[in-house]
Length: 75
Image 1 (cartoon, rainbow, N blue to C red):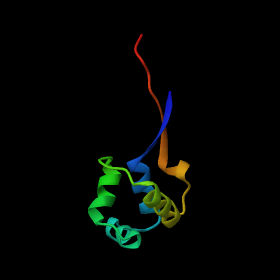
Image 2: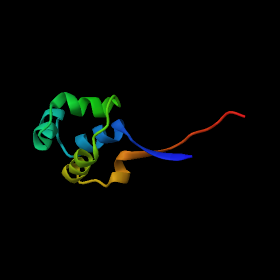
Image 3: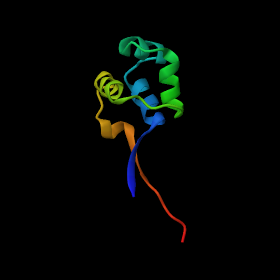
């Protein structure tokens, strides 16, 4: 079974590529800087509206910030 999961490392790399600090990105998105930090380390994921704003701000697609994960069941 495949699920899409938001990849915090990809968020961090996209943010850095855009030349933004966590604080600057947070200000643009009107959220707390700690929220961006939580996204980047994988403690939290942005909700749908925040995720769309994040992608728009960083000029990336949703696929750019997600990772395919395959759940494997041991036999």
